[in-house]
Length: 396
Ligand code: SF4
Image (cartoon, rainbow, N blue to C red; front, side, top):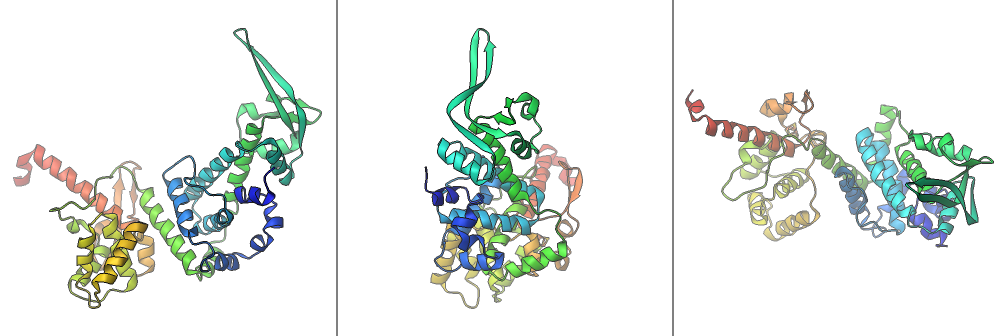
C-alpha cells in the first residue's frame, strides 16, 4: 500500500488530512493563507491554481500537469476558500467538475489495498473479500457476460453516496443486494466518491452577503490571495462572454484598433501620450491589455517611453515578464473597484447601457474591456460586410 502521507497528498479531501497534516488542516483560513503564501513556501502555488481554473473554464476533462506533492493539499484547501468567496454557481460547478473528474480518474488507477484504505478512511461500511463474488450473469446472443467484484458496501452508505445521482441503474432494486450489502465494482464506487468530492467543493451555499464581504476583505489582507482572486475574476468575466462576437482582435501591423478601445484603456493611453505619470495599477493594466492583444514587445515599450520615469531596461524586463506570465487584464468589476472605469466620464453608451445579446435574447452589461473591443470589432466587421455587399448604402 502507498504511504498514507502520499495518499493524502493525492486525495486531500480524505479525513486523514486532519491526522497526518494537522498543522495545515487545523489553521483558520487567514493564518493558512498567510502561511502558504509566505516566501519560498510554495512558489508555484498561484500559477497552479490559475492553471486549474483555466482548464475548468475551457471545459477540459482532466486537470493538466497535476502533481501530487504537498502543494496539491494547499491547492485543494485554497480551492475551497476561493469557491466560497467567489460565490458564483456556474464557476464553482466548472471547478468542482474538473476536480472531481480528475479524482475519479486517479482513484481508478489505485490498487485494491489503497482503495480499501480510502473507503475506510471515509468511514464507509465497505467489505473487501479475497475471492471475488460473481453477482451478475447476462447471456447475450449466446455470449455470457459475468460481473464480479471483491467489494461490497452497506446499502445505507450506498444510498447516502448515491443520493444525488438519479440514474435508474443506481436504484437499490437494480443492484445486487444481499444481507444488507451491495456488491459493487471499484470503478462504480469511485464514481460515487467523485460525486462526494464534487459536493464537498460546492458546499456552503446560502451565504449572508454582508458576512461574506467582511470575510473576503479579511482574506484580502494577504495580497497574493487578493491578486489570485482578481486574476480568476478577470479570466472568468472574459470567458463568460466568449461566444457569438468572437473575432480576431490581435495586433496586426498597419492596422489601428485603438479607435475601438473602451474608455478605461483610452484614458490611460492618452495620459501616457501626454507624458503624465501612471499609477502602478494603470501600468499593469495597460501592459496586460497590450500583451493580450499580442502587441509586439517594442510597441508596448514605446507606449511607456513617454512616462516621466521611463527606464528602458526596467520596462523591457517588466514587459518580458508579463508576456511570459500571460496575465489577463482586469475585468470591469476590478477596474471599477480601482476607480479606473471611465464609462461615465466618456459618456460611452456601450459601457453604461450594455448591448443586446442575440444568443441570450437579453440586454447584457459589458464585463471586460477586451470584450468591449471584440464587440466593437464585430459590429465594424458587420458594417464593412454590408457596405461591400451594398456599396450604395454609404451614400444613401
Ligand atoms: S465599463 Fe468596463 S470597458 Fe467600459 S470603461 Fe468601464 S471598465 Fe472599461
